[in-house]
Structures are given as structure tokens and as C-alpha cells.
Length: 160
Image 1: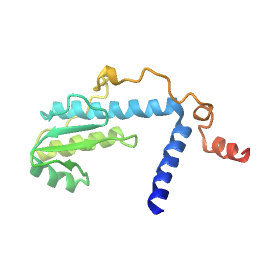
Image 2 (image 1 turned 120 degrees about the vertical axis):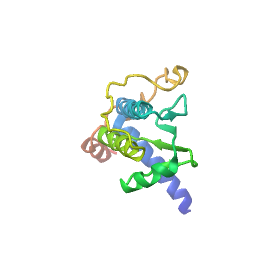
Image 3 (image 1 turned 90 degrees about the vertical axis):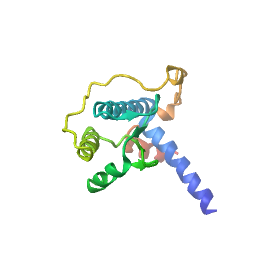
Image 4 (image 1 turned 60 degrees about the horizontal axis):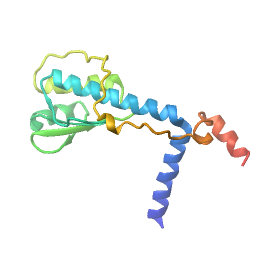
């Protein structure tokens, strides 16, 4: 029963997230996350690191001497997913700011004794295959296009 309740709560939260943000909001968040990930990947490439996945959306895998990076990253309160001694991965989400990306780059640069630099913010490329880009319509129902504030959501519940 607790497992079922936990799963239903996740489904309800996903539905409310989609309702609140709507199609345009979800698209904006997705584009923002991908742009941030591409910005990070390009900055890491500028540092001389090999980013191993040719296509990605929000997660990149980077070849690096993990033992050298881990101590510096932990000192700067950054957690990476250390796959093994030679690779780590990092996933970004809608809460990741440009300041966060700069902190990640600065931390990695310090770990390997490279001069710090500012990240390039003019990244416009997509790093996922064109065939994966959605061409069909989605979230066309009125519920996804009407309630984009807490007030609108609460007022809609009054009329139920």
C-alpha cells in the first residue's frame, strides 16, 4: 500500500508540474536544460577534456583522472557521479544556473591546475539527433494551457 501511494504521488506531481508549466513552459525548461548541458560540455572541451557521449540531452560523461578531481570537487561541495577511475558523469536540470556551471568549470580547472576562464554563453547547437526532436503535437488539452499560476490552479479547484 505504501509503495502504491508513493507511485501515485509521483504521478500526481508529474501531472501538476505539466499542468502548471504547460506546453510552452515544458519546452522552455527542456531547451534551457539542454543549452546549459551543451554550455558545460563545450567549456569542458575547452579545458581539454574528452566528453564521451556523441549525443546527449542533460547528462554528459567526461574522461578525467577521477582521484585528482574528487578531492577538489568535494572541497567545493560538488558531487559528480564517478563511474570509475577515468570517467565521471554529470546531469543538469532546470535549477542549474550559469553561476553553477561556472563553479563546476572553475573547480575542475583548479583540480588540474589550469587557468580559470569564463564560459561561452553563445552556444546554440543541439547535441541530440534530429530524428529525436518531437514533430507531433503534445499537451493540447485545455488543462495544459490555462492554469499557469497558483491562483489559477486554486480557482479551478473551487469550480469542481
